[in-house]
Every structure is written in structure tokens, then in C-alpha cells.
Image 1 (cartoon, rainbow, N blue to C red):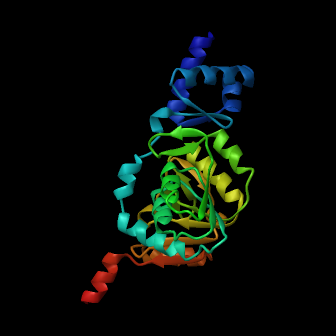
Image 2 (image 1 turned 90 degrees about the vertical axis):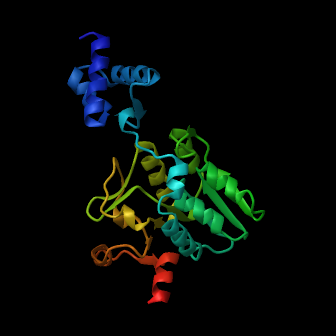
Image 3 (image 1 turned 135 degrees about the vertical axis):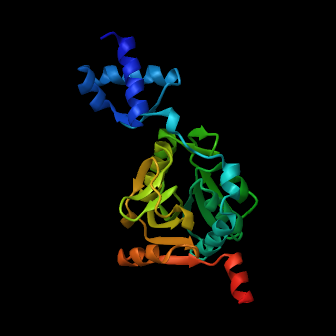
Length: 263
């Protein structure tokens, strides 16, 4: 098989399966892994796929939503969760904030106290720049324009330099059997690294995320120490989380407080 034919087949396989590993392609085409890596490098330059750790993913299924759109989706719930998350932060803490909109709401809610904040989010860094006592460290890396965040191997390597007290993260989906998931591999890999350098992992996820499985598995549920969600979470989900012995905080939104006051 000619190289051009093999490369076309690789694109078809990646688009059909969404992701594939170098070792699989090497066996399938009976060529060395180094040959496959060269193929993937060429195809990435032609914008036909995106290389990942140990393989490739389809660019047709990168489903990151623009930050401006996420910012207004379930905003009341995210703000309520952020207000609860602030209670877990004390002066002198070293923390991580990811590039989620909930983390941005948390950055807005943080008081101006001595903290060290490590983040891959441009929006979070800008928000915290207004607070003189907070030291902000950016990961750097490859810019993801939709999420306004840094991802990729450089961002991951930069995290290896640090150790933090708490990581405040979100995700695209929470499934009680399969765990946490993300929209693309770059975000999932970076958040895994964030979790690995933190003493405590606090997941901030609004109730719309429950029962959802998205493209890339990020972590198992037992990798988180505390889950903060909003008061629209279903009773069944609460019960199952309690069965799994996951510490849960339920944030009350302004709308639910208003309803209670009227009753």
C-alpha cells in the first residue's frame, strides 16, 4: 500500500472511531510505529486529524463550546456553586482553577486574600489580576480559542513543577458508573494532571451534568474528594452518590430561595 493510501485510510478510521492508538494502526497496516507517527504528523499539518498522546483523535468531534456561550448557560447554578466553593479556600492556600466557567465565577467570588492560584484559563487569570494579594501562575501551552485556555503537552509539563493544596475543577459529564468525562482529549489530559498534583480535588458541577457521558473519559468518581452541585440535582443521584460515600455539598440558587420565601 502506498503512503498516500495508508494516510487516507488512517483519516477514515479516526473519523469513524473518533480516536485510535499508534500501536493499533501499526499492526493494522503492518508498518512500524515510527512510520505511523510520521503519517499522523503529516495529517495533522494538513488539518485532517489531531495527534494525541499515543495516537490521534478526529477533529470532526471536537465539541468545545465557546466560553461566551458557556458563560450564560446555567449561570445561576454556577454562581451558587462558586459561592459554596469559596468557603473551602483559606488565606495562604495554593490552588488550581481550571478553564471552566464555574471556575471563572469562583475567581470573581474570591476575596482579595493571600493565595497562589495556578490556572490554564485566560479568563480566570484576567479576573484574578484585579486582586493584588493573589499570585497568579499561568500554565502556558497551546491556546484553545473556544475555551480561552491553554492545553497540550507544554501545559501538562508545566504542572509537574507544582504541588497544590486544592484543585477546583469541572467537567462536561458525570456518570455514576463510568465517571467523569470531557469534550476532548486535551482538556481531559490536563485535568487529570491537575488532579494528580493536588492534595484535595473539589469537583464543581451543575446538575445538568449528571447522567451525561461525553467524548473522553477523564477520571473515576473515586478520584474526587468533594462534589459541589446545585439544588436541582435529582434525589436518585444524591442517593447514589451517598452510596458511593462521596462527600456532597448542594448549593442553593437564588431562584429556589425565592420560591421558598413565597411558599
